[in-house]
Amino acid sequence: MIIFGTKGYLHQLAILTLLCGQCGNPAAHTLSKRVTKFTLFFVPLFPVSTKHTTQCTFCGAQQKITKEQAEQLQVQAAHGPAQGQGQPQQQPYQG
Image 1: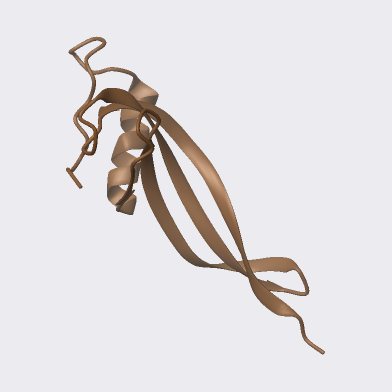
Image 2: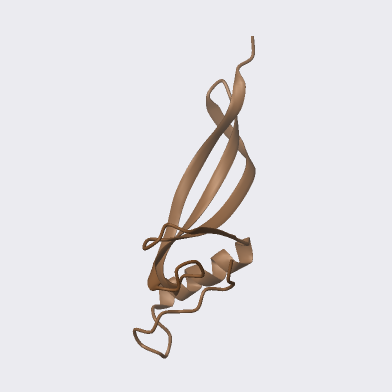
């Protein structure tokens, strides 16, 4: 008998201050990556799918983003606020 399935892993990549496309508030957003892996006998072997999302901590709205957008946001988070010290950064798209 072979036991197989999938298991999901959620990784928080960064927390950014962005303008929410849903509620319009400048609020903290969590940047997350969800990886689903194929398992064999409860051992995760290889990734089946990877999805990136941002979630507003004010209203809870969640938006899917591309891998490239997630990488840009991670770079932005690592370098801190841009020239507009303390100003919220515009989200890459409005959902």
